[in-house]
Image (cartoon, rainbow, N blue to C red):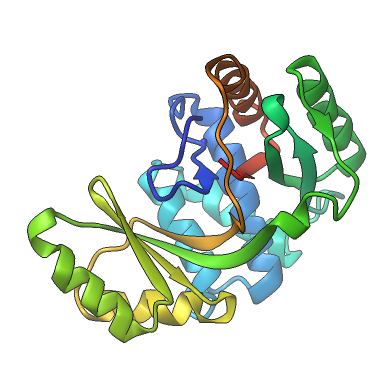
Length: 238
């Protein structure tokens, strides 16, 4: 789950080549395990887990895989590994600031492999804090919408507690405070509007542009990172 995310200009989707089912199921399974560990294994009382499970079902992830991932997260299934969420700070070609979110059961392996991908693609790892100060964490909700329904949908989002909205193509991007993400999502759904995606993202405080050559190199880097099982999300300041 490559290319710019259709939800917003601040995140890259991990989906252009999602026909690679094993890769997708691995990524989704780790998201489910992390959500279950953080909030328990009941999707009805753990909104983050419920959303992760719903997303996995959209990718036709088998029920057994989902249940196994939940049990792994809650500790019911003990295989000696613990999934951790780790964000690496980096610079890509053209000095693009990057926040690379991973879910891994071996952080030393993941660090070395991500660093190798960056180095071979004209990027480099950055010291902790040297990139993160350029970003702030916000809630991000994507609502499919037509131009005719835009005003109605935007008003519903604002009434639900949205901080800001941006219309991109066929999607209304709703931004929230971190602590309000799931509350706003639930309120929007109660009003009858479908949700395509909801998560916490890292939004850049300032954006930059790349020249054509650097842009091609950067897209190649994104594809290589997206293919890595441990890489969940990539945020940048483009």
